[in-house]
Length: 141
Image (tube, rainbow, N blue to C red; front, top):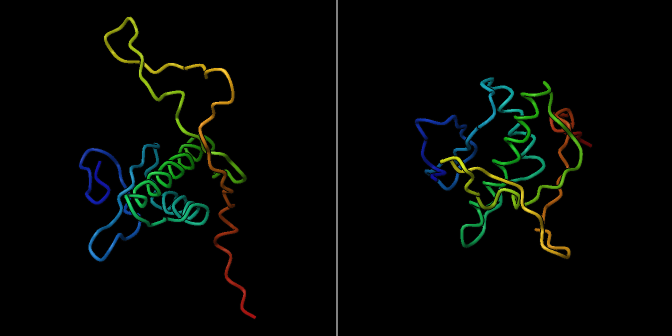
């Protein structure tokens, strides 16, 4: 995984500066090519989940969370023609954390039951704003 170099195979979008000479590159997995739609989705994510910087690679973790939310928005847009808004909780991918070999030669992902008790991974709640909320001009007093 390289955040700062362009991947020649997968679709990416440049998404902000990291330091004086590096740019973040986010993967886009949704079937969206309209740059306006992509930029609008990035604008929504910037508003609800800004990039954070800190020690020990936390800036990379923050960027991966943002890339995940970006793709959630773009997949929804591809399926429904608009961006969702409202509160959501994003959880860990515990259902797909370990691949399981099936009878075929390929590896498949399968659901796993949680062990007894309340063993939930921590999630984080965010409010996805409507695009019109973000694009409103600032009021001056």
